[in-house]
Image 1 (cartoon, rainbow over the protein chains, first blue to last red):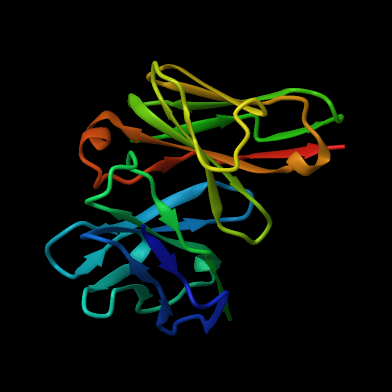
Image 2 (image 1 turned 90 degrees about the horizontal axis):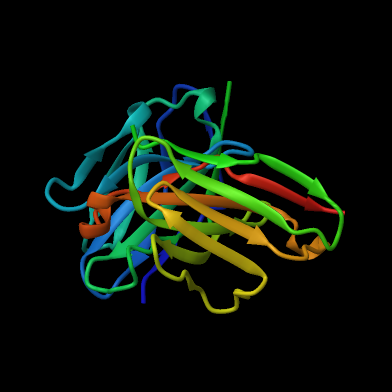
Length: 116
Length: 120
């Protein structure tokens, strides 16, 4: 079974400061990891993914995430937050080994609020 | 690229009505589409996986006869909420994977903008 945990319901950060949104995962084999962002009344937009290779993954809008196998984490980061980054962020995992037809398991989401 | 269009964006209807939601991949062929339900401030709950030309695979606890899914072509899947009741009110979101993604599971799902369903 695969699972994802986002321990923070909400993260508040001042504009210009670095931000981190936490994610930990559990899979039987190797993980494919994804971050998505959701704005109000919209679907999810893909930000970035980790498949293999370099542990630091760069994605859209200046976001990046670091894969840490020993800590089973995939935290989302941005060096300098913008007010427009305020949204709901979802971490998702797919277990490479399981069948299940490419199903993703999503975390519960973290609301990011960036204030002036 | 990889745009998914979902229609309608919002539906308000009376209890007992059946509602159809369409999910289209506009610039790619989607062998597999997914239907999710999202409650306020909650994560996405996968309802079913829709494969072109075959029956959808429903998640445990999702009523097949209540939520009818049809994936008639490589660019269109539909979700019909039959005899909708107020408890069916929710935000429904579809996603799709490209044909390449279907063979290699490292591709992201591409999401539609969702449908806000309100049953009075």
